[in-house]
Image (cartoon, rainbow, N blue to C red):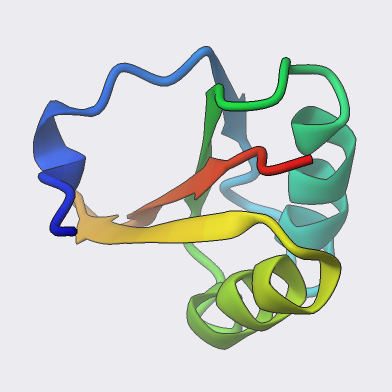
Length: 83
């Protein structure tokens, strides 16, 4: 199943730009708990470590990492709450 991440409409967007690791990951953890199962959270981050940290954490705890889109100087990470 391929997801077109550019067209995703997230239930919640968290702006973690300007925070260093593990800030974006902590924000992702908080945000995923605030949406319903099946909903999508978008995390904005300009910390390069997030490209590894967020997908690894999502897999470890059982959520779906849908992908990342590069924007102007930051990344848009998409997570789907799975449980």
